[in-house]
Image 1 (tube, rainbow, N blue to C red):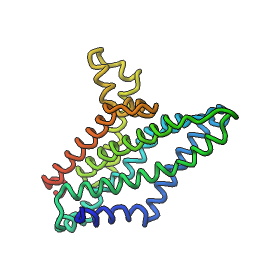
Image 2: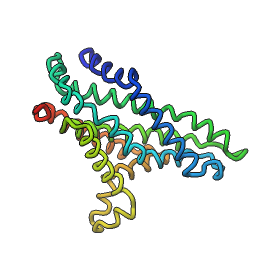
Image 3: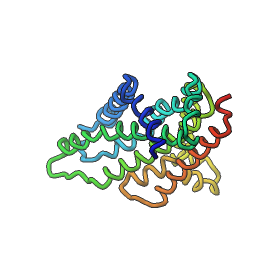
Length: 245
C-alpha cells in the first residue's frame, strides 16, 4: 500500500490542484441542480423525494464520468510520463488501481456535494410530509456503485489509446449501450429468451433496484463484477505493453 500511495496522491492532486477539477465539479453540480429543480419541476410537485435526482444521475454520468476517466492512462501515454511510471517499483496492477481509486474518490466527492439537496427537499416539502431516508441512502449507494462501474469502463478504454477524445467517445458509446438495454421498451426488441438476460446485464436496471432502497446482494455483486472485469482487462492491456506502442 505504501508503494501505491504516491501514485494515488499524485493522481488525486491533479484533480484538486488544477482549475479543471473544480470545473468538472461545478458543471456536475450545476447540471444535476438545474435538471432536478427545472426539468422535474420540483417546487410544483411538492413531494419530499430525491428520486428524480437519482433517476437523472445515470445520464449525467454518461458524459461526466468519461470526461474524468479519459485521461487516466491515455494522457500518460501521450506525454511520455508512462515511462516514468513504469520505472517506479510498482507492479502494473498497482499503477492501474492507484489511478482508478483516485478518480473514484474524486467522483464520490462530487456526488456527495449534492447532499445539500436533501435539506432543500426537506424544507420545501408539504408540511407534515416526512422525507424517507431509506431511498435517499439507497440512491447514493447506487450512484457510488454505478460511478465505480463507469470509471472501470472508462479506464479500460483509456488504456487502449493515447487519444483522450477517442477514449471519451468509446466510453460513452459502451456506457450508453449498457444503460439503454435496461429500458423496457428497448429490451423488448430482443427475443423473449434474451429479454431477461439483457435486463440483467444492464447497468440501469440494477441501479434502479438499489436506488429504491432495497440493497440486494445480487445488485452489489453485479457492480463489483463489472468493476473487476474491466479493471482486470485494463491491467492485462497494460501488462501487454500494447498501449505503449
